Image (cartoon, rainbow, N blue to C red):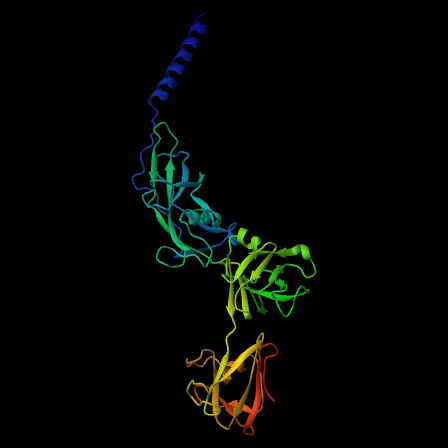
Length: 376
């Protein structure tokens, strides 16, 4: 019995000893991080972004771990805002690590919030390209205790440039035919309007009658009439009227350049212009007068006239009474023309035509279809 009492007493003393040890153990309490969080990664001076690269990592944010004075689990929240005060912000992500990848897709979200885009035709209020801006990022650390201790990093500025879309030949050809296209009538393939950076163009002789555009040669059901373009929001030249399933040309008959601008949603007609020969080698000399020879575009992209030539220099002008060098010898060489051997460049800064053939009267033809200048 005495031994049992001694054992019981020993157990009680042992329990009491450990209880005292537990009560006297130090208690660690998390404290605010007075130093805050500091980014340790290097930021680029500018980040290029695009929809094509939205899955890529734009940058990996790295920071020093928050120090709350104890070893504890810290949750980091990555915040982004277009306002440096962070009065409103977006949570980009959360992590328990001290790094986080921010994707180009995240960058694009802030670009859209800023009203930026990749359209080269849009500008900001100052008339500048609408593809450059900046947003801000910071890190919030939370210790996750009942004290709900938090600390923040200073914000970093992220400069972004949304790569503008390069215009491409994205539209398909159209074909125009009808009685109003007097050289063609209602006969496929009609005249092809070819596309260059979303602008379709063709030259045609127009008369006061109807015509229509088609997307497919030989397919009458592929027609695009006046109403189609109106419904698509196009502004249409005043020389064209609605004629049910067709366009009706009501202007002065002649050769016109038809331009359908899909980017600006317009259909325009530009009347053909003549060329005038001016210089010492031709009637009228270097002055514009009643003797100046006019080259008329009687066939689309073909100008011709009868002209008296002598061994001297001259050049062509696009506007009567306006001197320029737009249609000199070098201009046509640069455009890929083959020029009659009776002409050469005078070698001067204006690159005039120099006539070296036998003086006389010739039929001179400038053919922009076949890229030739000929004398007969």
